[in-house]
Length: 158
Image (cartoon, rainbow, N blue to C red; front, side, top):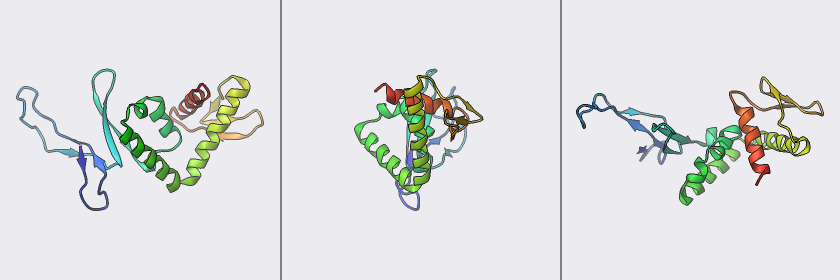
C-alpha cells in the first residue's frame, strides 16, 4: 500500500504490486505496478484465498455501491477508526453529489415501502421498476436492482 505524501492526492492510498519468482523467493520479475488512488484502500481475502483491494472513494460511494459494502460485511469488519473515516467519506460523497444521494435514498425508500406493503420484491425490466401506481423507478443495472432489494430487506429486518 502506498500513501501519497504530497500533491493533489496527498493522503490518498493506492495498491502497488510486483511479481516475484515463485522458484526464487525475493527475486522480482518486473517493476512495481501502481494502481489508482482512492481515499483509502483495504485488502481482503476471498473465499478461495485470493487477496483483492477494496477501494473507498467519495466519487463511487452512493446507492448500490454503498449498499454492497454493507451487505458484503466489509463495513462491519472495519476497525472503529476505519469506520469513522468511511462514514466521513460517505458524508462527503453525499455533499459532493446531493442529487445522486437523494435519488438513491428516494429509491431505497420506495423499494422498502413496496416490500413492507406487499411482501414481495419489486420486479424490474432493464433496470426500471414500474410501481403499482405506474411510477417509473430506476433501480440500475449489472446486479444493482438485486443489491438494492437485498439491502432494503436487510434494513426491514433490523
